[in-house]
Image 1 (tube, helix red, strand yellow):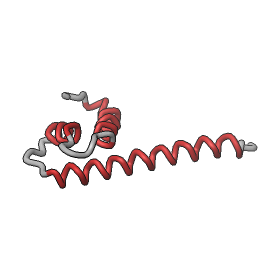
Image 2 (tube, one colour; image 1 turned 120 degrees about the vertical axis):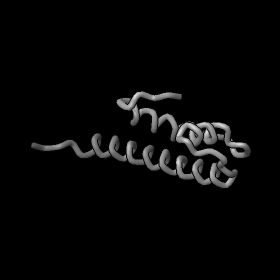
Image 3 (cartoon, rainbow, N blue to C red; image 1 turned 45 degrees about the horizontal axis):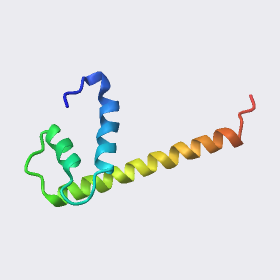
Image 4 (tube, rainbow, N blue to C red; image 1 turned 45 degrees about the vertical axis):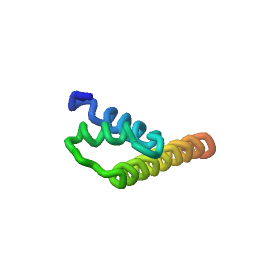
Length: 79
């Protein structure tokens, strides 16, 4: 998963999605992402915490996107 530096934002989004959707248990996607970040010998607790944070970030992004969409349709700007 070598990612060009100009794609780093997209790569981060992909990594967050991979981790947040990772099934509980062995966390294969989370382990892969952490290894790509040069973090080896991660524990199951490490993976669980990373997965939880990524899930929270994904949820917050979805709420913000939905709120922005609602606001833009209910409060048109009057210039």
